[in-house]
Image (cartoon, rainbow, N blue to C red):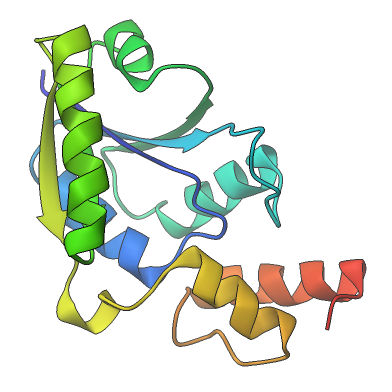
Amino acid sequence: MKIGIYPGSFDPVTKGHLDIIRRSSKMVDVLIVAVLKNNSKSPLFSVEERVSMLKEVTKDISNVQIDSFSGLLVDYARKNNASIIVRGLRAVTDFEYELQMSQTNRIMDSDVDTIFLTTSLEYAYLSSSTVKEVAMYGGDVSKFVPEYVADKINDKIKTLNIS
């Protein structure tokens, strides 16, 4: 069985992330979308909230599982018998960082390969940071994220009284 992992912060999950999830899920038997617990960032949503949103927006993709992890990605891959790491690329700057990470991962575990998918052109500009910034200034994020996620963002911003 070919198992892939698509790791990220997904804070929040965007239509660009969903594009990569849908496309990469066709390349593996099981795709684990893994939310990174990163203590160095100040996320808008908790890990549990991000996992819940991902479960909702991927419920129609039968071979996708949602999980969270901390620590080294290669250790998480090994624990889940995954041989593929999926990474999305928007620009050259993404590639430089991702290439360095994939080479490091490959040295740590030669059984794990990284595949890069370029984002569809319609999402090439899109990032979670941009979505959060637009939302914090009261902008409409419905073109960038699924409707369910847009509602969650708007609710969170009202709760935090950010805008």
